[in-house]
Length: 127
Image (cartoon, rainbow, N blue to C red; front, side, top):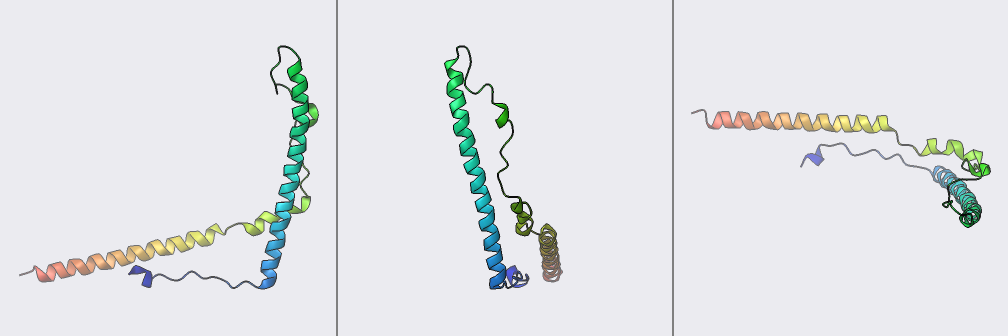
């Protein structure tokens, strides 16, 4: 019943060019992620080889020390993907204002209904 009074969400029509650019940006993000996964796989293969060498030494557990060259995560991701995530973020300010407007609308509707019910009860049971 109250959904009749609530405003419909506004959906801005997007052009084909905007959608194409967004899809290309997402493809670049996926490609950079796949490059990072490939680098991690190569890194783990090399570490697996060094772990088998470490296991052959008596008294040492696997993976207790890492070679210095693997102290940091690899940075094979392309530099162009650094600014792509800003385009995919949600505008929290707009969402907050929409939620606030909806809550105020529910509060006003509830208050008006309570006043109407109170007035009806007063009129009907006054005598």
